[in-house]
Image (cartoon, rainbow, N blue to C red):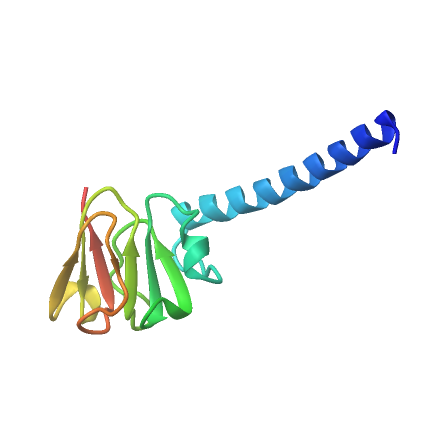
Length: 124
Protein backbone atom coordinates (compact mmCIF):
# COMPACT_ATOMS: atom_id res chain seq x y z
CA UNK A 1 0.00 0.00 0.00
CA UNK A 2 1.39 3.41 -0.88
CA UNK A 3 1.12 6.58 1.17
CA UNK A 4 -2.00 7.83 -0.70
CA UNK A 5 -3.85 4.55 -0.14
CA UNK A 6 -2.93 4.61 3.56
CA UNK A 7 -4.31 8.13 3.87
CA UNK A 8 -7.58 7.15 2.12
CA UNK A 9 -7.97 4.10 4.39
CA UNK A 10 -7.34 6.23 7.46
CA UNK A 11 -9.91 8.80 6.32
CA UNK A 12 -12.50 6.08 5.68
CA UNK A 13 -11.98 4.60 9.14
CA UNK A 14 -12.20 8.09 10.65
CA UNK A 15 -15.47 8.79 8.82
CA UNK A 16 -16.98 5.51 10.01
CA UNK A 17 -15.90 6.23 13.60
CA UNK A 18 -17.42 9.73 13.39
CA UNK A 19 -20.76 8.35 12.18
CA UNK A 20 -20.81 5.77 14.97
CA UNK A 21 -19.91 8.45 17.50
CA UNK A 22 -22.75 10.67 16.32
CA UNK A 23 -25.16 7.76 16.60
CA UNK A 24 -24.16 7.08 20.22
CA UNK A 25 -24.25 10.79 21.05
CA UNK A 26 -27.76 11.18 19.65
CA UNK A 27 -28.94 8.15 21.66
CA UNK A 28 -27.48 9.61 24.84
CA UNK A 29 -29.09 12.98 24.11
CA UNK A 30 -32.44 11.31 23.50
CA UNK A 31 -32.08 9.44 26.79
CA UNK A 32 -31.51 12.67 28.65
CA UNK A 33 -34.46 14.44 27.02
CA UNK A 34 -37.13 11.79 26.58
CA UNK A 35 -39.06 9.47 28.82
CA UNK A 36 -39.52 5.86 27.83
CA UNK A 37 -36.33 5.47 25.78
CA UNK A 38 -35.46 1.79 25.57
CA UNK A 39 -31.72 1.22 25.34
CA UNK A 40 -30.75 -2.38 24.61
CA UNK A 41 -28.61 -2.93 27.70
CA UNK A 42 -27.17 -1.57 30.93
CA UNK A 43 -24.06 -0.49 29.02
CA UNK A 44 -26.11 1.80 26.76
CA UNK A 45 -27.47 3.59 29.81
CA UNK A 46 -23.82 4.26 30.64
CA UNK A 47 -23.68 6.78 27.76
CA UNK A 48 -26.73 8.70 29.02
CA UNK A 49 -26.27 11.73 31.28
CA UNK A 50 -28.49 13.10 34.06
CA UNK A 51 -31.14 10.37 33.78
CA UNK A 52 -32.61 7.55 35.81
CA UNK A 53 -32.50 4.21 34.00
CA UNK A 54 -34.88 1.48 35.09
CA UNK A 55 -35.42 -2.13 34.05
CA UNK A 56 -38.53 -4.27 34.30
CA UNK A 57 -36.40 -7.23 35.41
CA UNK A 58 -33.98 -7.67 38.27
CA UNK A 59 -30.28 -7.47 37.53
CA UNK A 60 -30.82 -4.84 34.80
CA UNK A 61 -32.72 -7.21 32.53
CA UNK A 62 -35.77 -7.09 30.25
CA UNK A 63 -37.25 -3.76 29.10
CA UNK A 64 -35.18 -0.64 29.78
CA UNK A 65 -36.55 2.85 30.37
CA UNK A 66 -34.96 6.25 31.05
CA UNK A 67 -36.42 9.30 32.77
CA UNK A 68 -34.99 12.75 33.24
CA UNK A 69 -37.75 14.10 35.49
CA UNK A 70 -40.28 12.77 37.98
CA UNK A 71 -42.99 10.51 36.62
CA UNK A 72 -46.19 9.54 38.39
CA UNK A 73 -46.44 6.40 36.29
CA UNK A 74 -43.43 4.47 35.01
CA UNK A 75 -45.61 2.56 32.53
CA UNK A 76 -44.77 -0.76 34.14
CA UNK A 77 -43.00 -2.20 37.15
CA UNK A 78 -39.36 -1.20 37.57
CA UNK A 79 -37.35 -3.86 39.41
CA UNK A 80 -33.79 -2.55 39.01
CA UNK A 81 -32.54 1.00 38.67
CA UNK A 82 -29.47 3.17 38.03
CA UNK A 83 -29.61 6.78 39.20
CA UNK A 84 -27.32 8.75 36.88
CA UNK A 85 -28.55 12.10 38.19
CA UNK A 86 -26.50 14.33 40.46
CA UNK A 87 -29.03 14.02 43.29
CA UNK A 88 -31.15 11.34 44.94
CA UNK A 89 -34.44 9.99 43.60
CA UNK A 90 -37.29 8.23 45.39
CA UNK A 91 -39.14 5.29 43.85
CA UNK A 92 -42.65 4.36 44.97
CA UNK A 93 -44.52 1.07 44.89
CA UNK A 94 -47.71 2.78 43.67
CA UNK A 95 -48.49 5.20 40.88
CA UNK A 96 -48.67 8.94 41.60
CA UNK A 97 -46.04 8.76 44.37
CA UNK A 98 -48.03 6.48 46.69
CA UNK A 99 -47.23 3.34 48.64
CA UNK A 100 -43.86 2.19 49.92
CA UNK A 101 -40.88 4.36 49.05
CA UNK A 102 -37.19 3.74 48.59
CA UNK A 103 -34.44 6.34 48.15
CA UNK A 104 -31.76 5.78 45.51
CA UNK A 105 -28.71 7.99 46.09
CA UNK A 106 -26.97 9.92 43.32
CA UNK A 107 -24.92 7.56 41.18
CA UNK A 108 -26.28 4.45 42.90
CA UNK A 109 -27.16 1.34 40.95
CA UNK A 110 -29.64 -1.11 42.55
CA UNK A 111 -29.90 -4.53 40.85
CA UNK A 112 -32.93 -5.61 42.93
CA UNK A 113 -35.34 -3.01 44.34
CA UNK A 114 -37.21 -4.04 47.51
CA UNK A 115 -40.49 -3.79 45.53
CA UNK A 116 -41.56 -3.14 41.92
CA UNK A 117 -41.59 0.65 41.50
CA UNK A 118 -44.44 2.38 39.65
CA UNK A 119 -43.50 6.06 40.09
CA UNK A 120 -40.26 8.00 40.47
CA UNK A 121 -39.68 11.40 42.10
CA UNK A 122 -36.49 13.22 41.15
CA UNK A 123 -34.81 15.81 43.35
CA UNK A 124 -32.77 18.86 42.53
